[in-house]
Amino acid sequence: MSDEEHHFESKADAGASKTYPQQAGTIRKNGYIVIKGRPCKVVEVSTSKTGKHGHAKCHFVAIDIFTSKKLEDIVPSSHNCDVPHVNRTDYQLIDISEDGFVSLLTDSGDTKDDLRLPTDENLLKQIKDGFAEGKDLVVSVMSAMGEEQICALKDIGPK
Image (cartoon, rainbow, N blue to C red):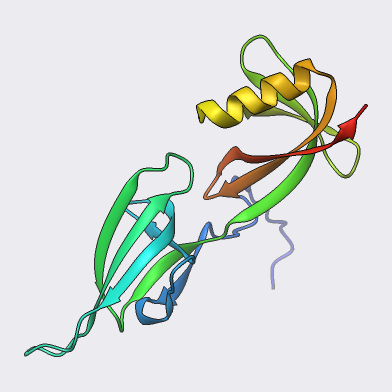
């Protein structure tokens, strides 16, 4: 065909979507759903009967997994909803910096320094107190839709 070479500038990521579609009628309590652009954990689902114009509706009550705000949505049960890819990863806590960032050790031996301390007062106090006492702490980091946050803490004994 042609002998000229084509060079493409690639500015996109690998194309992995932050969400995947799932039929509203199949989403259950304790599952995940995107409401108003926020990843949420479903705490209550109720389904109404089909009405005069055909669609049964699902009423979702869910809590934002990062801000703990309560959100609600009503979707026809036959329609698709976005469901976030939610991952939990455990990291060992190495250090807490003065400006509220934590230094974590990954499984591969690298450090991860781009996470802030959690906003939850109780969890924040547990992490700071445990770190001050010199305990070996493992934090669970939840990530979804490009956001990450520390959501739990485990004590694996003294150093």
